[in-house]
Image: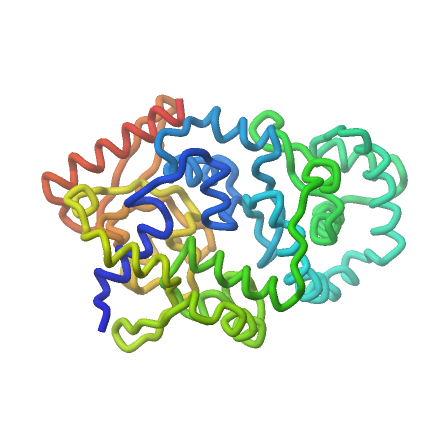
Length: 358
């Protein structure tokens, strides 16, 4: 039977927070397939910390060059994704996502003609490689008589992103501007439906494994049937292991990598400062392997859905951190007593974040 420590080490290796890291932020997006990104600044740090030494400028450069795009590929949540993968991901998730919003669209009095007019207007405005910010898109629609108040504008953008018309592209001030997906990311992989299910599961496990079928279904907001189809497609590329009576899936490559390279001293002693909404915690339905129930309210105060930045040692969440001032300095609040070695490792991680942030 695999131990919890083994499980956590494999996850850290899969996420690239321990072991080999990626050279560029775009490589990180490709490794994880999707990086939760509703908090733009936090998501930029999520990419950078998984690289060898990427700066904030490096992250923004990959966004400005279209090597990473930002959209709603699943769960109605913004993610950073590789541009070549976004369309086939939407092919798996869009029908369910849009169907789930039908009642909300009726409440907002949004119907098919509204979406068509909004699409035509924004396509004309953006054609030819142009980009505009969210506020400018709202003004465009308002001038044409399409009301954007009461979340109507948000749902128009979301629908057009879900249906492959728009995505968030080059940086604009502290966020991003909207572009036409076909122009910004013209190259796309084409996968058959069953092949896409298999690719979705494989890529999730490569960047998040070991994980359960329930974790994957939650992460994609997909179906168990779709997950089982993906599992059948993958065959021997995925194996099973058991930890504390729970069955997990792991790629054969990750299991072999963990087995062939014993845990290093650096891995044992490292302490990571992960951003708010990081995939290491949010990438799973069941988070008990990395976070004690008694500490959950300190990560999500009041259960409001806003996840705090976390301190992680040997795969476990041991505290939170925040950046109180503008100089990049951080304030750590640990749940457990850190050893002197861990305190030094945390200080090194804090310094890495300070260099990134300033």
